[in-house]
Image 1 (cartoon, rainbow, N blue to C red):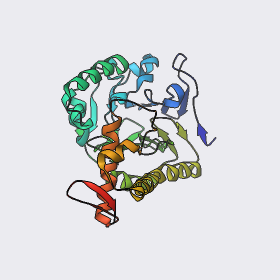
Image 2: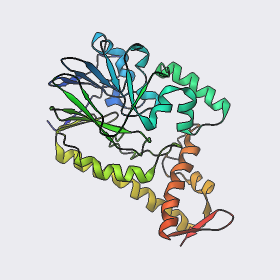
Image 3: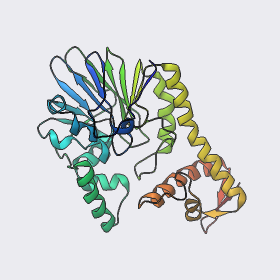
Amino acid sequence: MGFIENKLGSNVQPIRVDFGRVSVFMGAKNGKYPDGNQVLIRGSDTRAAFDTPVVSNFIGPEFDATELVIMGHVHEDHMAGLHRLPDAPVHVHKADLPAARSWDGLLAAFGVTDEARAQDMLTQFRRDFFYAPRPDAQGYEDGASWDLGQVQVRAFHMPGHTPGHCVLLVEPQGVVFIGDIDLTGFGPYYGDASSSLHDFRRTLARLPDVPAKVWVTSHHRGIYTDRERFMRDLAAFAAKIDEREQRLLALLGEAPRTLEQLAEQRLLYPPNFDSPWVKASEMRTISQHLAELLADGRVHADEQGIYRLG
């Protein structure tokens, strides 16, 4: 058994996979967004959950008995079950804490400033993710640990996707929840205002050092129990960054372009995919690649903001 997945829809009881005191409940279509995969830990003293995706609303009493929520990072799809746990403490890395505590904090993390768009997003998040901020959320730091009784959780700060993104290791089981380092064919996402390409590169290099035997993603891939397959998919995931860089260089090789013109060519999304956030995500992603290329001298920009090969 090297790879476990769930291809079923959301109208069935979630598939459950147990590793001792750790249970993984697979979201619809393997946790594909807007769903995710739910990790629950049954410590002898405390029951804990890692994030709360949509599937958490269909688990029942076992999820509702959660006494502690440890967030790997903060996005709307990871908060979808918090409304069911109003009395459970919520712990979030300090860099993502504003996004957990208020709507304004989450908007700032996304980089959304348009009021109409913000209101549309809030309506969608309340409808699709039962969104409710947690002003009571508490901050933790890299290396934080929680003793749940016969199991311990340790946080490894691995930013990039968000500034506070962490992977959460359960010991002694060796199960690590790697969140939105989801190993998808899409590749790493660093298109929010608070995301960082530089940090994501470092995170991907460090992830293999976490002493794990089982790797659980929030989305798409599910559960890895074979390190060789995990490492192969991690390498393919990381390679998407360099593929995007080469695509960007090829576009500039065709003709000098502005940032807006480059975004129109699409680095992330296919031309026929349309959503209100696409342009902003493309521009933030491309601008980070351009910053690296400018620093390396492979690209130059003039006073009009036109980029060309160095």
